[in-house]
Image (tube, rainbow, N blue to C red; front, side, top):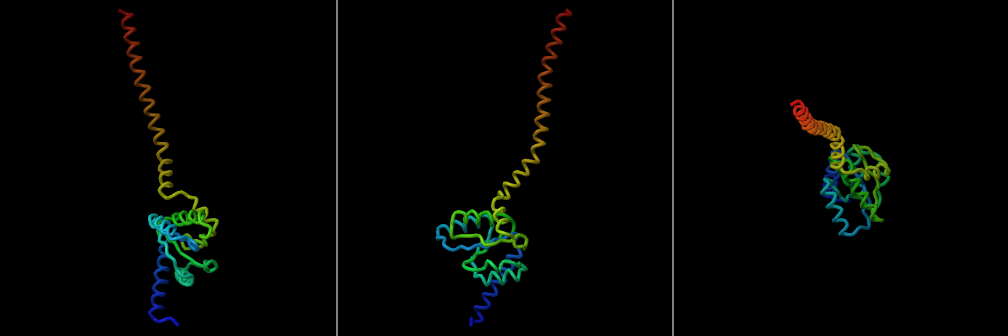
Amino acid sequence: MPSQKVLEQKQQIVNDLAERIQGSVAGVIVSYEGINVADDTKLRKDLREAGVKYTVVKNTLIKRAAEKAGLNGIEGVLNGTSAIATSSEDYVAAARILQKFADGHKTFEVKTGYLDNEVISLEKIQSLAKLPSREVLLANVLGAFQAPIASFARAVQAIVDKDGEAAPAEEAAAEAEASTEA
């Protein structure tokens, strides 16, 4: 029987993890088995830079935290070694980084994930992983908004340039006409 102190520590871990799940927009649970320290360090660095929190946690604690957070449907994948990655702002960062890492490591696999407190399929996680980063998406949207404005500006500039070329020709024709009259 665990001591009262150990139980309190585990309850605190469950409470913290439940808050983290509730406060996140997306999360991914992986089996991190069989990766070396160098790869793990690089993975954690990439996740940290993307604003993703990544923690290795016992399956029973993940299960209890998920239940407390109202996230149902992940119990079936909670076996073996598990780690959870959560993101409070970016819907695709965790899926993109972890799926890319899993593609390069045979023993590392994505188990499940969730978006807005709903469990999603592995196919959806893989689809999310293929999406570009938030910055790239925003740049594409901005480019789409700027394209019509830029086209309009080029058209106006072409008209100005055309009028600028026509004026010297008209002056030359007027001078030629004046010289023939004289």
